Length: 162
Image (cartoon, rainbow, N blue to C red; front, side, top):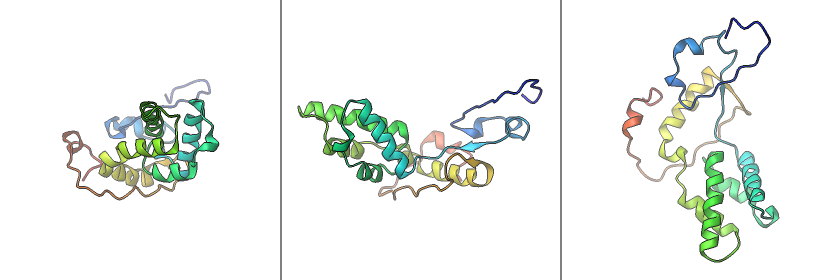
């Protein structure tokens, strides 16, 4: 990449940066490493707005502030799936989509921030000193886990877990 003759902008993504060879992480290969964190409350509200509108529903019928708060720790994809799940719940009850269906879908969803909580916390710590945050750089606290979650086998080889 450093031998490029023309002006180009190269972008790569990695869900597991520890799987990349070190030579890809040095300066000169990529000018910056950006960390894309979980969405903030405002960003989650915007994601709900997008997906509710996309499903042909009037967003004025939904408390986006409450949804943004209740979905703390959710990724954009998990919010999208919660909206889809809420539509199934509404259909099953023979009603149009209501806020209670979205709340139920959120309660039934186990976001990655809960199932891989320690991995995400460690990755955030790593990113604070080794990457540039793609948004404001202020990670929201993850909701407190109320249960003891056992470690999965694939987590044991994760370098971000101590």
